[in-house]
Amino acid sequence: RKQKTNKILTEFACFNMAHLPISSIRVGKIDDVQELIKSKPNTVPERFIREANERGVLVSHKTHLHHHIPVVDLSKLSKPHTDDDFLFEILKLSQACEDWGFFQVINHGIEVGVVEDIEKVAKEFFEMPLEEKKKYPMEPGTVQGYGQAFIFSEDQKLDWCNMFALGVHPPSIRNPKLWPSKPARFSENLEGYSKEIRKLCKRLLKYIAISLDLKEERFEEMFGEAVQAVRMNYYPPCSRPDLVMGLSPHSDGSALTVLQQSKNSRVGLQILKDNTWVPVLPLPNALVINIGDTIEVLTNGKYKSVEHRAVTNRERERLTIVTFYAPNYEVKIEPMGELVDDETNPCKYRSYNHGDYSYHYVSNKLQGKKSLDFAKILN
Image 1: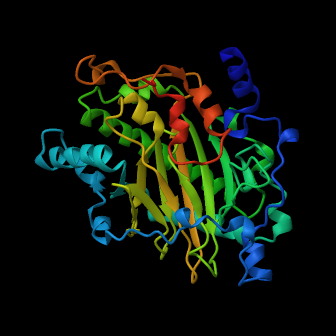
Image 2: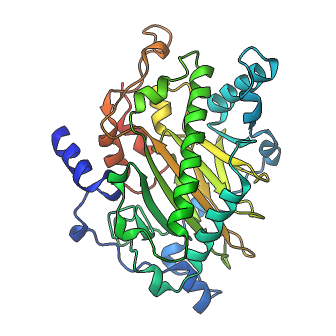
Image 3: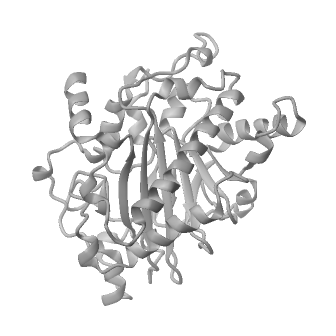
């Protein structure tokens, strides 16, 4: 099984793959939501309408909670490790990872121009005619290209969202046919942006290691040549946002996820905290970071991935650019020995190859934190 999976990952790159052969997946008709609002702006097809208990209208009634979503200032973490500002910010980071699994970072060091450039070409891509975007299709059972991912049946509900996803690093996970020639500078801007996000993820993992009393290079040494992918999400306005979901609830299979929300973005991201959906208010020039399933396993559940989703609104489009950063597919993942104690904190997750988990993750529809069952030790 392991040899077979590794062969698939090597030849096709796991970020492209799904559990079933493409020819056996029947996804039915998938309407392009941008085209829908052009032709039938007041119509929501049945396949997008969710059951009452899972609709996006379930906004948190504990509205005060959004004020407590942690904000970490990376400029303070650049100070000497004995500095009071550094110690305070490391504590804040630790609490954010343990209590929320989500936080926003400010003073992250990525130039505004780099952020604006990737946002510009992403917006231009989604504004191109459908015929042009269809040159880069997300085939059934894959998660690269333009379309909707994680769809495996004809009756599966659809998200009110168009996606464009690409494998970025290492080069072996790229599908060159899906890198668009238009808009101009798309590839150049994505390359520059991805290099900056990669550096940010490495910095964050060093700080997370320090917060766990580990050697600061621990994660980088463990991850090998880390895998990095990007997905651009475009959420058009919807005449009935109370009936649909922008993006289904899920946790991420990555180690870290970095979310960039477009300027003047409406609130769309919600995280599940204490069984309540809490909106994440965009901060100017901030990036949203969330802990993925991989960090939850490595820390034996001390730092938890969190279920999150996206909702829509009637008035305005929303654009996000999401980067997923994870260990190399060949890396063995298991709880780190320093964070396991047979008496007080026994091992909660089994050992597995990260490629196997990635293969499992992209082979199933988004369904809360269900994918993590793959790694859990069941009593």
